[in-house]
Image (cartoon, rainbow, N blue to C red; front, side, top):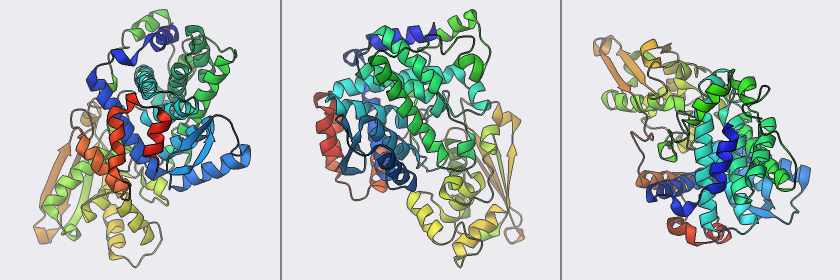
Length: 463
């Protein structure tokens, strides 16, 4: 029932009927995706994925698409989307939705770009599929969470497979029955475990790449006549009953009432290259840094009170950049000592020995000393505010030289949420910081991308 209604939505949706605000957000999201994916292509995980695809499949295929970050390289449609998905997620800077608890841009845009370019589709076709993908992902993610995430599943990998299938179905112009078949094939491939991210590995971005790969595969198989279960989502042995919670027909009817409750307009953008659950702590630490300035040596203790999921990011000894992205104590310590936190700073700290047992850098040693003074406490009152809010309270106690003074501050909504948004200027600044050598004038084509073919758009953007 749920998938049948979604299939109707996908089949009937037209970009021309969408309002200007949604169109602008779609374009801002694309700008943010392109910014992150272009820089993310330089990371080891993208290089390894590219090398692996060449080993397994070679680079010869008629339907070819671009790899963001390498204008000379064209891969098969599905392989290009796979690599671009990894590039878009490996920096921990891609957009997301707090109720659906998943990253959408890293799935939607690689799928839409690869198919649109390979089939020489228009920018309006592209945007139409983008809005469909976000809406389906937000709806399904909001249905299954928080239970799905609490069961250990990475929603961006599991629901992300349905999202990619929805985008691909729209672009391939499948009929309602074939869209249903696509979902059936996506559901039986859906996978992705949170342990990949919490243990700090490249497996987290692989979940994104595989979701995209499986979604395109499912839609293409369906286009060619391959059948999939039409009850894969709500059936007795389907996705909901196996991965989320036991359901019945009445519950399914209630689920459909939520289809328009959450929208594309509710997504957040990320400012810091850390898991989103750490961002409110970083914002709080930045505010406290104004009071403490460079006197961080006077800090005696740091108490971080936050909601349960954020408190689980308690890695006190990260040994790689992937592990660091999920370390709440290191994020706070680096922020308090350096007064900022960004990719270039992290690369500099890693070079100076952040993950080494011993370092000659005084800054590195100061960070590690401060980490040892940090205590994380899950707070029931703050936890009750999640997921609508993502609150973190930090209390800093200074030593006797500062007469045992206390400083504290609380952030309820991290920067980038719809209630505390990043502006278009902020997104441009983010783009410049990630891609300092890029000619920003090329980005102007995004403003009117519905009037251009996607091939033409990529020829201008992906230089």
